[in-house]
Image 1 (spheres, rainbow over the protein chains, first blue to last red):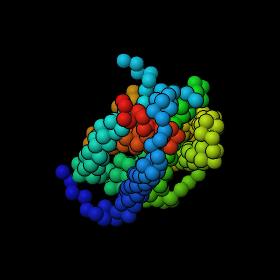
Image 2 (tube, chains in turn brown, blue):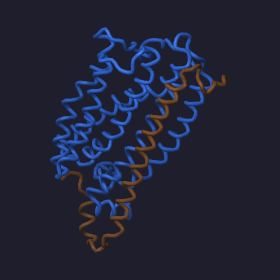
Image 3 (cartoon, chains in turn yellow, orange):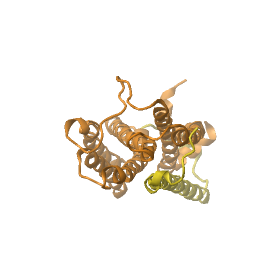
Image 4 (cartoon, rainbow over the protein chains, first blue to last red):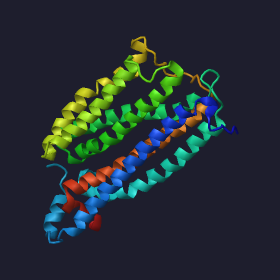
Length: 65
Length: 241
């Protein structure tokens, strides 16, 4: 097993910069998805549950518009 | 069992929810293993020394950017041709992850280019066609966001996705068709790879991790899109399926 030094033979800025950007991009995607899901669930819970079951069942079985 | 019922977005909603952990957890594990092999097992390159280690994120991201675009175009085309809502929603869901991977490939490529070529960017065929891919993703996402009616947005997006798919073989073969600064393919399906085994292992593990991550994230986003578009039906299916 090789233990690489953090400076990466003077090329650390490029290597860690590339991985840092990738990490930021992935974290951004996950956080934005989480926020989107949370907002949707909040909206869903605030809406009334008064939709008739027959309407829900009909739309659940539709595959095309 | 009628599997066609899962073509209904609302019926697929709970199934997608059950599938997500099966992709997300292995993705996290494989990212850890791939980075460990890439940084601790794989030796430095004899020419580029340490900086070649960017390959372990750059190459899988570039492959995923291209692959997800083709997949997005197929789903968008199927959604358009057969009026299948779930396919169109899948295309919308794929776009952001594809754009993210393309952005990663462009930026990590720039970080690799500076120490190896002496420049962050050149307008060579591979890099320019990858930038066009990024613009196609942005165009697809913007077009869908700009149209209020989801069905019209899906159709407009499908046209753009199908026209833009011609760019993918151009990216792939650009290093063969034109004399570019970008290096040629190191891994080919029918030929022996020209890189060391541990480097190849790290690359393939990271590719698998990116694959699994994409499936998990696309399914999470697909569930959000289904909820946005057909909240009532999804609620019914979640409770009754």
